[in-house]
Every structure is written in C-alpha cells, then in structure tokens.
Length: 315
Ligand code: CUA
Image (cartoon, rainbow, N blue to C red; front, side, top):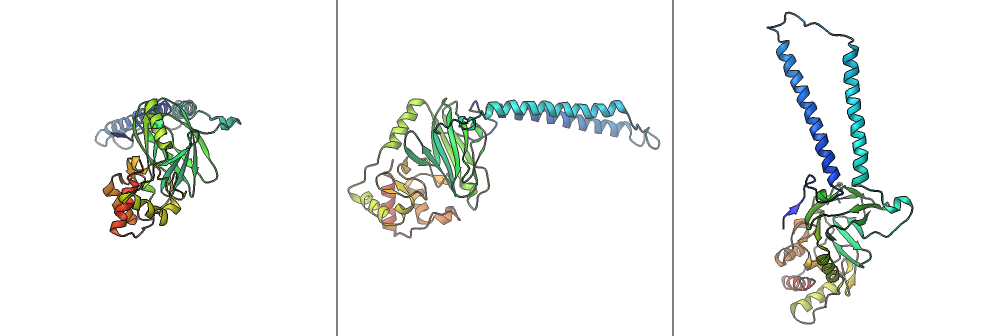
C-alpha cells in the first residue's frame, strides 16, 4: 500500500488545521514577495539613469509612509498570532493530564536508539516500529524517551512530539482514513537517527480489533524441525537476553519479537520484512545499521537459517 508521508496531505482532524495555517502563511509570504519584487522592478525602471539626471528626489520623514509600513506588518503579525493560537487549540487540544486528571494513555510510545516501542496499555501487549490504530478513533499517546531525546512525527497525522527521558509528553492522535502513514524520528539522536522510521497502519475498527487479538495471542513454540532448533538457538544465545517473545523470553533492550513476522519492515524501516532480508540482517546488522546496538550473533549458516525459520513462525 502507498505510504503517505507528506505533512501537506492531511489524514487527521489534528493535522488539518496545520495544513490550513501552512497554506495561509505561504500565500501571505508569496504575496509579500511579489509586492517587494514588483516595487524593486518598478523603481529600477522608473529611476534608471537614462531617464533621471543625478539623484532622484529624496523623500525624508514621510509620516504617512512610516505609519503605513509599521502598522501593516504589525496587523499582519497580530493576525498570524491569533490564527496560530486557534490552530494550536484545534491541532493539539489539551490532554486531561494537563488539567490534573490522569487517565491512562491508549498507547505508550517509547523512543529507543534506534527503534520505537509501542505499548498498548489496555490491550496488554507490546510491539515495535509498526503502530496500528483504529481509523476515526481519537487515541491518547504518551511519548517517552528511553535513552536520549527522540521525536515522534507522523507528518500526515498531526504534530511532532519530543520523546524525552524522564519527562513524558502526552498528545492526541487520530487517523481519519484507513491507510499506511510513514513517520520518522525528528530529533537527531545518534548514528542511526535516519533509520528510526515509524509506520502507522490505520484500519477500520473491526480489522484493528482482529489485529489486537492476533498481537495478544501467545505464539506456539515449534516442536519439530528447523524452527524448533531455531527456537533453541533463540533461547540459548544472546537473542533472548535483549528481545521479548511472549511465553519464551522477556528481554526489553531490543524490540519485542512476539509477532515480528507479522510486521512490514525490519530494523525500524531499514528493509522490507522477508526471510531473505531477515537472514541478511541477522548475519551482519552493522552492514545495514552501523552504530545500532543490535550485535552480530556470529552464528553458522545452518544456525542462522534455523533462527530465521523460527522467527518466521512468529506471526
Ligand atoms: Cu531517534 Cu532521531
């Protein structure tokens, strides 16, 4: 599916006013630019040397002109200020926590170097890099930083929000139409800042509920073949120390892998999620994300294939 990434293509009632004010400001800026250029050109032609001898007549201390060029920009600034305040009220309505009451958020978003964790609070599961939401329902997000400051930004769906360690921020989030929306970390946070992508999948409510049930399910541990051997390798090597798989391990350093094979991309948007890419990624993470904290497990080719076979069962 086409991924919407443009901030000018609004798919949220929270982004719509931002698009609106952007267009208004652009139009005003363009009009001022045209006016300034027109005056420049007109003056250059009217007072060019061949038409006027010596300096043209000077016009000092013209009170009318000075009042005009002070008052007009002032009125313009005041109008833009009012428009900005209105936009902020609609695009970023105050959350209940800012009024004292503190309802739990729907999703806790945690920025890590270099991936995103999404904790679905009421539903009780954790996933990474791919956030599913019900289209048309307004959710409350709590944005946190695990290590350094990151910034959660899905341009077509609303404002940016900093993910600061020890200082959670809350904001409302809504996608009005089903679709795939691309976002990214918008605060420089280290070597792999560029590969800290977010994929928001907005679904009709019933599809979203089906996805939730799938994410809640504990995957069956394979009991035979390569996948079973892969599960052994997962448990006995460093994989299980950093990664959680519901029912198998509870590492929280790296992304939760309980349903990793159900996700569209690997390594926070670095590559499409398929067995070939998964094997390439596990064989040499540094080749694809130099500076990420995913270590090279240094497995033999056969063990690598078994591990991939296991991970592919995690749907
Ligand atoms: Cu995280 Cu930039």
